[in-house]
Amino acid sequence: MTPLSPEEMDHRLLVALRACGSDVRTAAVARALPHGGEHGALWLAAGPAGAATDRSRRPARLRGTALSCGAHPLSVGLKRVVRRRRPLLPGHAPLVRTTSPHSFASAHAASATAVTLGALRPLGAGLSLPALAMCLSRLVVGGHYPSDVAAGAVVGALVAGPGDVRGTGAYAGGARFQGVRGEWT
Image (cartoon, rainbow, N blue to C red; front, side):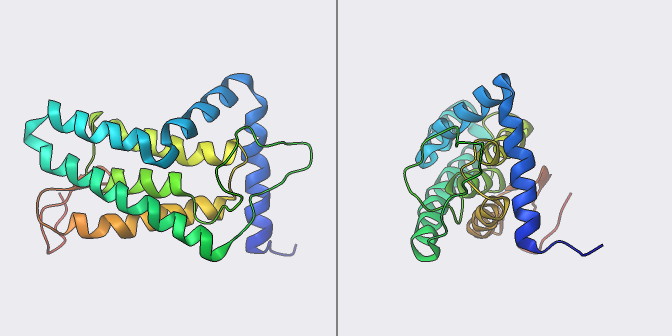
């Protein structure tokens, strides 16, 4: 058996996840998430709300909001440079309209990842699940290839990196980051 090329794997995974949009309930959720995440709106609203309700982690929550503000335009800039066209799958029209014809890197994934790794946790430890759902929704609606979403997540992680090393008790992947030396608990 011949191994699949990265492009073939990208396409097959997209086809499988896009097929999930055939389920009415899944499609409804997948359509709703990108609207809330458009231009990072969901994360921009959640950050100040979380900061207002949780004084003990206010700096981390506001830092997460600021990092999301940095990740979104960076991924939009990448789209303008790379200019990869959004996927078109025969028999599977996209479930949402997009603001740009370009897909690499996913701004939704970049913002969601930056917020999660940057310590914005208005829903406690459960924020990682909404961020993951946001990333997956981009595939279910047919707006991105999996590699676009992965690249967006990398952009978000790179932007969030400086937020983690400030030694202010940032959260990353559910573990508490204790300082600039990289100690994890």
